[in-house]
Length: 198
Image (cartoon, rainbow, N blue to C red; front, side, top):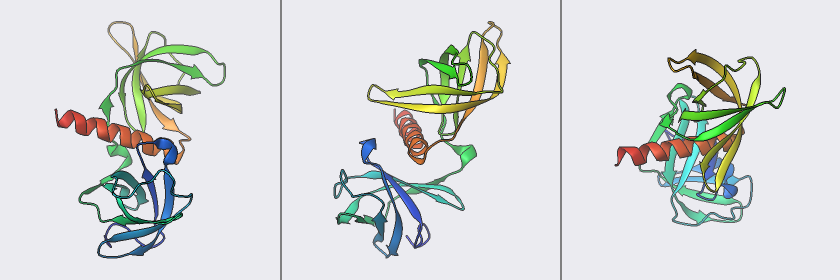
């Protein structure tokens, strides 16, 4: 574990219940795992339950799954993960994401109907019937499931006219909160693993 986390390193833990997302910093590292002092009380975290963990490092975002073996109100001891991976921004897992949604021009509140094509923690690609201004920021609701929708800000970076007259656009998410980014990383990673295991 000494190679993965260091004293004072910030780590985010994301349970299935996103409202219980918590973060903290590493206070101790041993051969069995590491201890974290949490920013918020550890409500919603249970011992021996597997959770997703993320940490920004010089090598990219460190991702792993593990469980807490000891817990107080504001401290957790996390067991060594069996596997881990580093996620580079340009290597964020991209998944097929076919939904009907809309984007809203933040400067005029004009709405555009869109059909999404793919999604990653960094952005999304979609189709629309209209040519859209690339120079403004848009609001988009990313509906992950019936219980979870993220309201994201999107900056368009590319537009291509298709043979059928529709426009394919790509955009990157901007001004993301840490929780939004980690939620998208977690969602795309899990969907990709599900697809690989089919």
